[in-house]
Image (cartoon, rainbow, N blue to C red; front, top):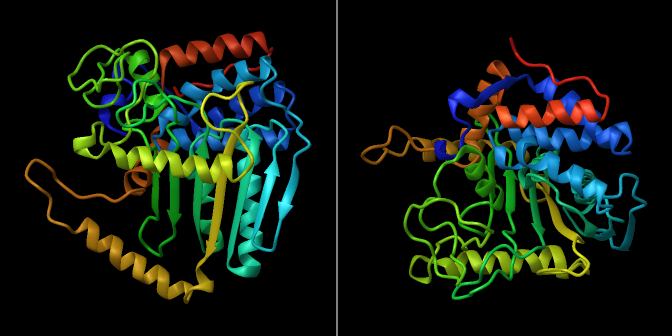
Length: 361
């Protein structure tokens, strides 16, 4: 994540991964989830934080989830069902399950199908927010598979030339294993910036960068300024001249796969909710020898990082490499949370009669 969105040094409180996981699990369990489901949801959030994807970690999302539980939008004990199924695909009615519980289970189903027929794909409707999409795509890699995950729903992004939001940010994530090199993990919203990054800017007081949002009339904001009220994200590319039709198109096709194919909804739904997702697993050995594939990935990724850097830059990365390196640092030094987030944790755990989150000394 760009430094512009990071927690300022003076506002940081360092927390160990294990302590963040325990407290987050305890909070989820207090919402009525089973311990197993609470741990699964907590793992998704904390994995985002340990990889430096703070937009989809505890800082932004946990309080949103608690509000959704309180409003009855998330079912802590869902009776989810498979409504359509073949040897390679399935559709799930999630019964308002938490997305961080339902989507990993759907990916596990896709993996089992891919073991038998080479490819498995599962669509989900009647779900909820599912956290960082990379978390679900990465679930396929230990099985020597390539993972793909999409989530749709909502209306926070304006179409190209549009004056009001009609599509979601619709992130797509791919996870591809390698051998000795860190895996290629690409997790990108169809918008110029993830919606949750706007909340990070508001928390830290950093200004809005050009090309991320539209004003109230839909005109792209192309100069630095304070973050405006509301959320009117721009497609990636920001303007038609810079390629915003590409991000807009990615949002639409992602919504087709996750929402319409699953019999879910799109845009602003009435009643609100009914999140939708799509996951797929591709078994590498159905295409070629796994060891040879991973060796080729190593060669390709090495070829990329050995690209001579342009002036003003010291190295070239690929998707997943910065997160891999950040994970090593945060496992050693702790996860930096904003002091306001720690204050929220203390207040929440006190209200729920849970132990305070442990700080690093």
